[in-house]
Image (cartoon, rainbow, N blue to C red):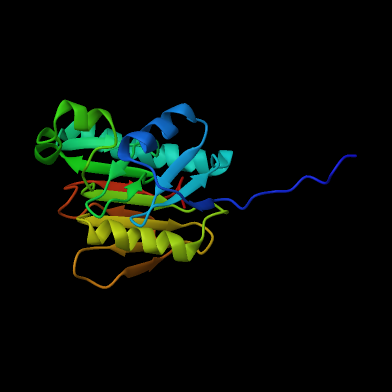
Length: 195
């Protein structure tokens, strides 16, 4: 007898207790999936993004990397990079950047695994399966854990939400570019291939 297949929600949220080492090993053993863990231990399993979102994310990471290569002010990371935030959550922003002085304070072992640091700058590029509420919660979490600038790029609504410490979220409608402000001096993200 053949039973009907069932589908699991994406992203899948599970409450599971994992040590830092177990979580790292889980991610390494299943590198075709993306995992995050909330500060209260909820494991989030995400499937790979669609090709269109991946292409736009590659453009985002490329522009950030090109700026950093010229300025050599920090380290850039793509969506595969994981960070252990001060609140205990393990997160992987779609693109991020850490000031060089802060990165160099980490030990080689800390740099090799999920670095115990919140990036100075984070970007989340929403894919069609992402929840706006959950992505906003994640952006607030980055800000509360030390991110100095964050962009939530919402392609569906053609909006960008800008997160800064101790400020209300600024919402831009159909922007053509974004400034890195004093966090990423001189960086301007061209949104023509992203939004």
